[in-house]
Image (cartoon, rainbow, N blue to C red; front, side):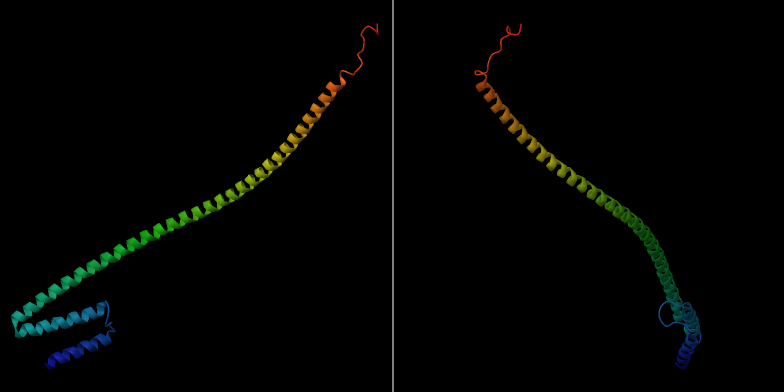
Length: 170
């Protein structure tokens, strides 16, 4: 039991001396624990061969699990980096599309303003032309009325007009 306590103190001292991190992934701490586990297995194997062999199997299984987790971690990190790059590219492409669309919208707004101005000008011209047409219609109606009155006057004055002889001049 005292050798276990001494081993524990030695482990703590070495972790402190080598400035290994207590949390997260730390290769220094992994080396220290690996060496301590080797020494522990050697001590147990010296006393009880079967327990030592069992510890070796447990250690091998733990190393395989850690290696599998490390592989999964690395693959997920690679996957997320690819996805981030792809998302960044897509975002950049979409930002360009947005900029183009905003420019197009600005151009269309300018065109709409221009067309509205043209419509207003044409409507003003049409209104003015309608006023002129109405004035011409009134003038024509007045002239037709005057013409009709003059024709009536002519009809009334015709019977009383002197007739010129053609023979008097010869």
